[in-house]
Length: 433
Length: 88
Image (cartoon, rainbow over all chains, first blue to last red; front, side, top):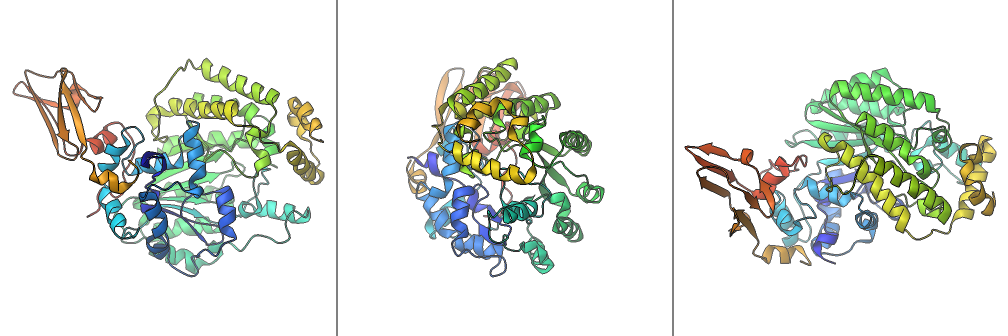
């Protein structure tokens, strides 16, 4: 592989703090890698400062990338590259001025080229400080999304514990310690560059530390130079949080929904589609008034793929971009490729029909998916990447595991997937439903 | 290009084409193109430089940029660049 296929500039400006306060090198190092990481002894915010982790403990990662190594933890990005989905790697490269077309020249022309060279000559060391943060505030959440896990939802943790799926709850959220939040925010003072803080839950709006964090930014006068990214599950509206957000210089708003039919209630249990739609419209109106960037965030699974077009259609009409972080890997039985050929064909035909209804043939690659000028092209690009994935990804033989899991959840929730997805009856019955 | 070290060791150039006439230009050198009589079809590494991207002074069309790929990033709306204002 060439440097073009493996290199990423992310570890020169980005890092992540996980729910339990442990550090991660990248927000896209999710699922398999992250689960593996959790069993390792990784540093936490209780032990060393984020800057110390970034500058010293990420040295080897930077060195490997400069050496052109193919990294196991970057496999999700390689997968996205393969199916024409804009990968985290491409997004991060763009933030340093590099793009896959004219890769060598754009990378050599990057304002960061001198920093890459410094790291190359110093075993991966950098004097830089992270500017692009993903900060997981904790798993405080009122949703029990079927494809989620207890580390991201307290409600799900309770349910999984009662069903015997876990023995104990996930570790305590680091943001329950105000001292750590204040130390983190103090560490941002004096950085004279633009910064991006992606704050994640659980459900951010009801996470107590989220308000503390926003107020902390305002108290330190950091709200004038940061962009804050948040994602809401659209089940609640909190006026006090909205008022705090209005004070932040720039806000990138993410709104999670899987489809705009009652199936969303089953997947993002126990949401109610009427409330979700009402809040969706309300957030979009607010974002338009405030000039915020807005995106619908999707996590396509084998359950939602047949109705993904309802989100694309809504977004296309409202001129709101649509984005998923990655192709879902875990839980593996929720992957789209778990579907049999018949359902995959139905999903593929539906997406093709929707794409062609927009009169799209080929479009140029939109890597800056937040550029408001190209929202509709970006939506089509996202739809095409899922089409490509459905049509090409080999079968994932996990239908029986999917059915076992759904039956267990349904025994607690007193619902049935067939009430929402009657089209799946043969597929699910064959797998033991 | 297998690694960053190889990239640094490579002599990279821009291809500047004006009305079909092509010249090589060092990648990181500032670019200045002057065309007497006004704009003519111009590309840099196959990227169209439009008339409006330059300016006309005394009947001479002038295009300039310090770093072509950073300029292209900005003109095509690719978003902010981290560390662009940092002291190196």
